[in-house]
Amino acid sequence: MFPQHVFPDTAEINDLGHLVVGGCDFVDLAKEFDTPLYVYDEETLSGRCREFLSEFRSRHSDTVVIYACKAYINPAIACLFMEEGLGLDVVSGGELTVARKVGFPSEKIYFHGNNKSANELKLALTMNVGRVIVDNSHELEVLNRLSAEVGKVQDILLRVSPGIDPHTHSHLTTGILDSKFGFSIETGQATEAIRKALAYPQLNLVGLHYHLGSSLFELEPFRLAMETVLRFAATFREEGFALKELSPGCGLGISYTRQQRPPSIGEFAEVLVSSMLDTCKNLKMELPRLIVEPGRSIAGPAGVAVYRVGNVKEIPGVRTYISVDGGMGDNIRTALYEAEYEAVAAGKMNLSETELVTVAGKYCESGDVLVRDVKLPPLQPDDLIAVPASGAYCPSMASNYNLYGRPAIVMVRGGQARLIRRRETFEDLMTHDVV
Image (cartoon, rainbow, N blue to C red; front, side, top):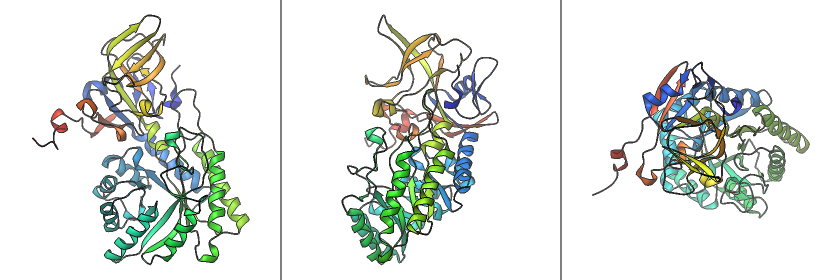
């Protein structure tokens, strides 16, 4: 059965048995743009943006939704988020430059990162970004000095660690004590940071930020973290710190396999907002502006990767490997996180899935596997395999390992496909080399 909920909202199967997204046949897309190819459904991207805005603002009108660019960003996608009224959560000078290139409103840019360079901070100050999310004491000092040099007072949030385990993969956990991110509440470092920030003349501390981790399916940690951080913030009212803004990050998981059913955006919004409202009422605090930072939960479901089958290797009694023309160079998540995915035969969607196979990549690593133990119809060389839920952290983490170029990316809507990133050539790979 076709796992519709793992694919973009517009996904369907046509009369030829081909996968169709945004009105575009994947067989035709592969012919026109070659493979590997990443396909983003514009309707799904826009729909997720609007759902986040409506679900949160219907519960707390003073909510800002900013897209976490690390999931994946390029100029075309940045323009879409600008049109939908979102802000941007950036973590590098590169992501800042994409925002500047498309004329993204600077007041809607929030600059994150645990080790921002002085040059990146200068760029952020020059661009007049809305908020810098300060991660450590060194950055407090540097940002105060740089702000004085340019003659401005920079609005900041402090990133704190609430010490709550969100129950996800250890590489995706960020809000516990043993983390490279943020000031720990438990150790007293967050207390010291607030007092330092209040004393710096070129910094205006407007709020706090925290982030529990990524790909989260449990909602209770979100509630606990909200209560913990609000109670912590309330202890500083007599020291002159009024919490005007609070960012719980995001981290909401998505469906990667047909068995996975994450909380809905509405359920997520209800837990965060109700916890904030109840805790602020109990503490007699003014309600802060809420800043939500979805990335994966917007881009992930909108993207599908499509590959062409090459070698088919059957090991009798052990496993059948279906090798494709992509792999860990464009999607390292399986190798890095033991991530699980679905896969379908994009040109044979009307055939029964009778064979248990493992979809392997073409890179020179035994760990280069895209999808383990998935049922597909019998496949031959040149058949197409599509992997859904590939819109987040696949293109953005892509590499040139084995000197392969990164795939092309297209955006689809209403039966039309437009190229938003061309395929890298071998010549591109040597652009920066010096002979």
